[in-house]
Image (cartoon, rainbow, N blue to C red; front, side, top):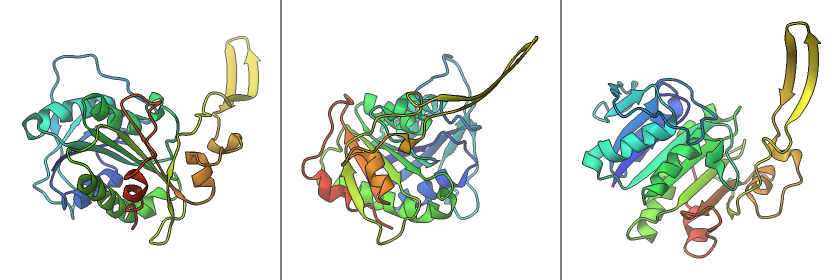
Length: 263
């Protein structure tokens, strides 16, 4: 299995290397990530047809033979480049993460660069997996989440031939370990802008100083069975959608497959 690993937080963050190290146990891995943090970029792209990839060296503890590349561009661009450049274009799936912060939503790639990179794979007829963790807990969970992602990807490979053309959106709760339940969920409503609010507004003759807040995941009462409801209960949420976001997949073998996401 040929895997591209991407993210939106940049080539230097440890989450992407935890994934690369662990997923190399399943097959060949190549890393493609932005030079810096592009969080919130969604599926924005670099509209240049000529560019230059820079090679990146894996950190200590990661197989030095894992090829890694970086580019000053949004994650969707890196995912697209990886899909055609890695392994001579013979890519089986793309895994994006491990992101610092959850990315639920009916179309999570509208805002999330993590999900945006995974959606590029879906739009190319491949399997795309986005993996996100609670912001303040993610760093201490990278190793366990990487192991769980490897188990999940292995279960998908065992359950499907060929690999399915779907977006698998994984969101991991604050407390994650061997006994954390996993639930196949429906996508949630995105509250980032529906609950956007102005907190402070001070005007002077030169302009206006603003302080605002984006909507939070829990600003609305969660709907039973959706992503945010699972996260509120401390459960790993995995939502699976087809090439069209309205195609939510809940039937077998997905309930059994997602249960393999465990540390």
